[in-house]
Length: 206
Image (spheres, rainbow, N blue to C red):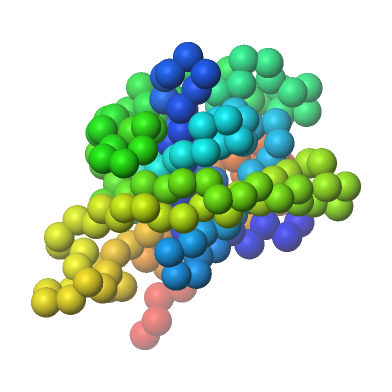
């Protein structure tokens, strides 16, 4: 399974009823002010991005592993696909409440930001491309960052650059949570995908 993963992004989007949806993902890559997001077509986030053309990419720090894991086996889609249901997914319309996270108003887009995330990127969907072996199972969304919010403590003083030492992103690596180079907790997603992991504490360097 080629699920190498990237820093965890909590995507906030707006549901048809105007409520907020929040979904963790780790299939994203960045270049300049643009980002490509890989999402399965059965996800409520996919439907929301197609319809609303807006989202917020909230970059989760490793300290939010518990909150992200509480979202791992939930979906904002009221009809849960059979394959997801068999894995243990359940319908959950109150994503922020389930995760224990706080909605924060955005400035340029309708979906809210996640207050607890130190980096929040308000984005506009530029294009959506079929993705996957049959061009039907997933969508690659091209989004442009319209406004970036970064906590002051993460900025190198006197610059507009994020300090890579100060920022400790939550990494989803083959369905397991890592931060600061170590496994920070077990993952419900890994269990749902039946990943054959035997996690061990990293060896100490003498």
